[in-house]
Amino acid sequence: MESETNDSITGKILALFLRLIHDIYTSPINLILVGLIIVLLVKLFLLKRKPTYSASSVKIQPELPKMPKQDLTVEQLRTYNGTDSNGRILTAIYGDIFDVSRRSDLYGPGGSYSLFAGRDATRSLSKMQLTQSLFTDEYDDLTDLTDNERATARSWHEDFREKYDIVGRLLKQGEKPSVYPTEESTVDSSANNDNKKNE
Image (cartoon, rainbow, N blue to C red; front, side, top):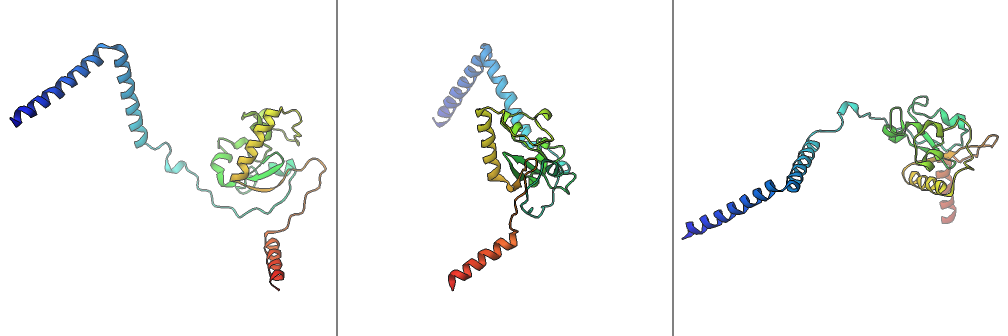
């Protein structure tokens, strides 16, 4: 009796499987869908097994010391492009200069955003385009940007503020640089203030 039950269950499963094969085989839509599923599964399986990069292509950048805050002219900023600056890479957005050196894979030579290195990237980010013509060798006052482009650039500015250190301001022609306290004097003055409070 038990073997008859097993045979009937096996027979039912086999009948369902044959019916499924028949339904797939007789319908062109089902054939196309099964073909797509097989292709996607093969691609998914191969992508998981094959790395997209080789270990030799990954550049390990030594960590640079924190850059002291300083304002720069457009000409001075251009020197921080990752090659002329011992690996230091700076970019400016809305007048703030960001140290993006730790992401040399993106902003350094050959990186996806290497056009930003040593440049004011505000116009490019506002228009969401990576085109050489959007970068200038002079201070860009951005007066011709639309309100939407300004909002887009501000959004990028906030994104960069969350990820990278601001190391200064981009100076307009003839503008005087600010004098920033050094890190040590900032630590010393806060320690002195704490001591005065305790007295």
